[in-house]
Image (cartoon, rainbow, N blue to C red; front, top):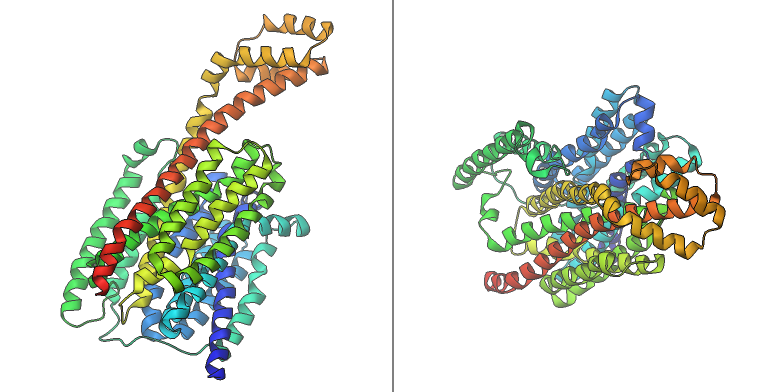
Length: 532
């Protein structure tokens, strides 16, 4: 018994470290994108491919790793994944040119995509039911905390070393330790399999996911509907959907012949699993909303750009606590209540951003509430719902859930960016309608001197009411009192636009969280019926 407990402890510890390492890399690169682009002398639109190629690699690897880990053994696949991730990290750090860097990022993604799935699948196959929630909660906590702390750690490493290569070299020793300890300490587990590996299905699934995800990454947030109408978006989406349809028919035939399809079609026929996938996609959208919180702290609260990432720390810690407590809640009260509370608490946290936050301490409270609510959803409840009453293909079920979350994380940022862009696009009209009033109020508050008023009278008749005119004029104003008043007024116009844009973003996340609550209510009787 003590030996079993020891091996379980080792396994969950190593899986947690692996999950944290992989999740950290999702965010850590964001702190260095500008530096990396400069080092390779590529424009920002090309530099964004460092993130896009990683996303595509994750989307392709997730469903495949979920399946073959069930078939060939989770310990073996965990070690393979860590090797790929560590090798990819080393190659990224040593990249001599941009093309090599992109290829290395793809290798890295192929390794990082399956670590969380393998760890979760191991827990669901080896831990007693009453302890699965707590273990999955720990994995979810590492996943959430790593993703949120990534930009913070990236900024710190970049500040200390001044070299972006160290952001990736740090993964290499961690990967080496995980490989050695994983080989000796993690017990091997796998599911019974029938037939040969579904190579045709694997190719169809990879091409289908690649088409859908590439199409989604081409959507422009500032012109959402217009970009969908372009061949670069709808062409790839339609191709991906068509290939996925062919895959379903092919794997359905294979399943009838007692084969071992890469996509167990029988899973998609279960209402509980389909609703769980939908909630997973919504959770990806909610996670994507958190990506914009540092920018909110900069543009609305005035936090300096170099410190904005640090203000994510309370959210990260809260999400870790939420994931751990959510796992315990699942063990004691079941997954449905955890999903319901997660959506409810997350909605409260996000609604506070546009309706309540004015100062930084309010920001800390609101972001902590949102992070706590999201944390509950990250680990145990959805994983439990996706694999209940499944005797085999647990990895495939979890892979489908992870892929749904990845799709949500891909679509949502383009929509959120659209809200922000539309908010800032209103600056000219806000300036034209409200600037004179705002400036007059600020001048009255400042009680300007006669010299300042005289200079203002001189410039007022020579400038039109546009932000550009006043911004360019500021450097020529001599009186410091007048300069401060005009700068404050211009900043207020920008703040109004920013608040409007972020309000749309955060109200959208509230809607997503509310849908999660509704789906939890709908799912309760459906799950109860399926368990009878």
